[in-house]
Image 1 (cartoon, rainbow, N blue to C red):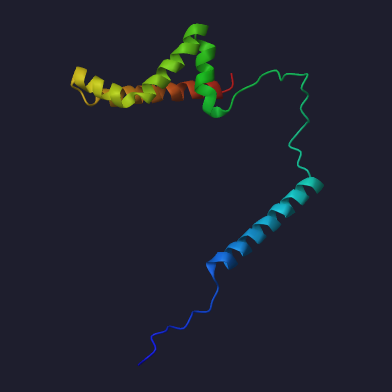
Image 2: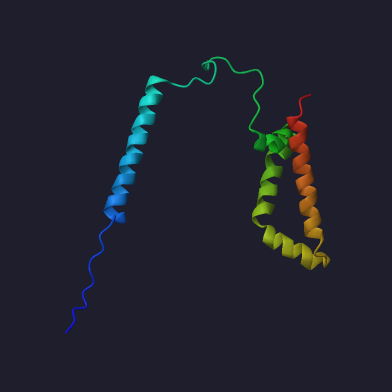
Length: 131
């Protein structure tokens, strides 16, 4: 009778050997970053004065179209039209099929989307370019 026992493989186990090594290295690097942040704090610019508002505050670039829209239109239109547009984005699959059903054209929803993107891009460029 032969013994079918296979010898156990010696080696480096993933758990707990590898995991614990990675955790130790990660904790050491985190500790090192914290110490460096305490010793050498980063200063980006002047300290902010909470009592003085900057002369012109501009939003981040991805809010430029909405910012320009609000500046260009009356208050009610500037506030409620974006909600309407967001609702159209949310329900676009239904709106898309409704447009196709009413007009019979599969190209019209694409044309509407392209026109919308041209408007958004135009508003973004108009706000980004300094006057």
